[in-house]
Length: 275
Image (tube, rainbow, N blue to C red; front, side):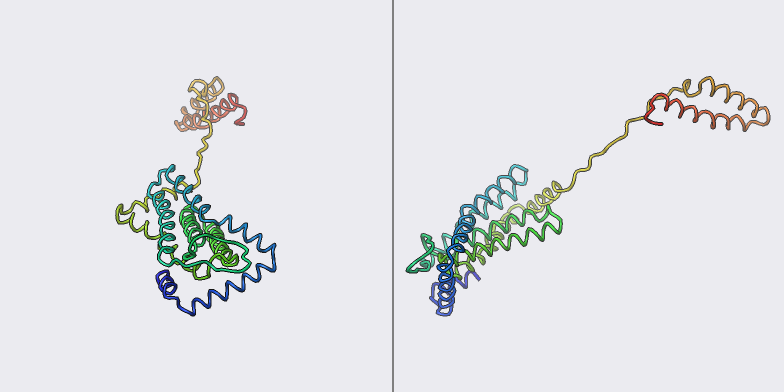
């Protein structure tokens, strides 16, 4: 699509030219009649400026480098640089002037094709969404995807409504963004196969909740002599002796009944909190 739009702009295809002029004139008249709307669009255009978007992507690349995911950091930095290069190359090939009005509400220097804000916003939002995807659950993914799409559409609409880019300039910027994002990833995968996948798995592991094991304090050691105290010894001995004289099983029964009971009593006496 980007190559097709580039060809149509260079040849001056009349249907595309009429489409651009019609939409630009309509939105410019609306901007002149609503100054508050125009001021809000100018603020949004400042927030979506190419240097702001590339700064966000560069910050994400620095964070990825610090976390050890060097392949993803290189991909993000390469996408920012390649987007800038694609914008410069398209402007050099077409040298298309921006819309001209008698009473403009905004101005942008240099050629208009492709739209720098549209390209930079699409590349940055796409890259940030791709980095967030393995770390988030499905509701967060849906919310982030909707926010990214809304931001890209808002930036593209803003530059058209302010009269600094033609609609086809914005479409060309959006069409170039997937190529800008995919080309560094493909080159890195061919150079270092599997490196991006390992970094993505590392991001996913970092997003998992960390479970802290809580161990109960151990029971205090109880000696054999303390477990079989005077009461336990006499009771166990008498019960064992009497039962042993009658056949033997009583001895084991006495030990099994008195010993554990006395051990529990001793543990309770040593630590009242266990009662």
